[in-house]
Image (tube, rainbow, N blue to C red; front, side):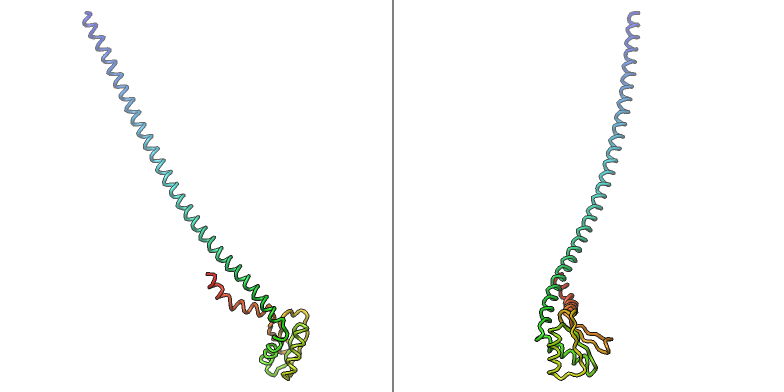
Length: 193
């Protein structure tokens, strides 16, 4: 009986151990499956995060490149405008200096009046010193039908009015400089590029 009891105890013990081992194997199997699922999920999330970060980085790089391109274009435009403004200011200063010499401008004014008036009555407006020089030049050239008036606001240069003031041609420093600048702009733009 003791042997039978011994066998029964061994059988119970063996069944308990087998049952515990089976339970342990089941728990271990579930844990491994759960761990694999967690690893797969983490890998998927990491891959998704990496793809999203890569897309954001590419978009940022494109925006940065466009911003740099625009800044470069703006810089070129600003430099071109600054150089043009500087050269126009120099041009205006030089034209004003040239047009403020009555001895040099009077023959040019007389020639312009003769060409523009062509026998019509004309009025020439100029600053006081230049008006006197133009009167003297026109008198020396015997140009008739031309009235020279003093215009304190004329600045440098002169203006010619025809058809009772309906047509006016300005040869002022500002007008001559503007016309020269307009003609020089394409060349300036080509130089700046």
